[in-house]
Image (cartoon, rainbow, N blue to C red):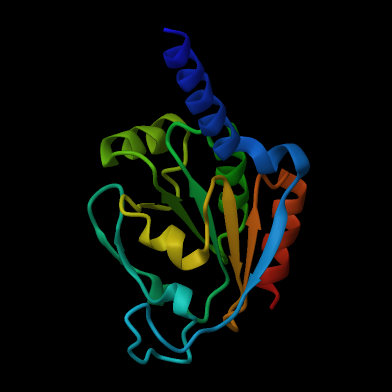
Length: 182
């Protein structure tokens, strides 16, 4: 009984830490570089960052190509349907996306079932921009995301800046404004 209680508490602590550990200390940025090969070693289009060379499915079952983001300012928001931090920041992300129509926003949900992701999108009001159901975490892997929330800021020139953790609304607005002028 005691061992089971200790194991349960350890799981709860790990889940909570994965959802919000970066939020307590503030966001951390990681700059990504262009790559010339895929995971399998085959050559890729050098004009498109390796991170954008993916195919995915949206929460409503439509196909999506990461290549469609090449040459455009874009923000990818990485979230999980059960993450309370993600739930709390969803309305803010939706506001910033709506205020910046020249920047493409993409939500990348993972760590849950498609039905949970779809419910999250509706419940927390982020249906105003494309939401991917990254059930196998391929997109998360391409960007080096290991926990949520996280943001990838993509310039039209292909520069990618990954920020782990919550980004306050004023800073998110500044970052979005910066990539739209790049």
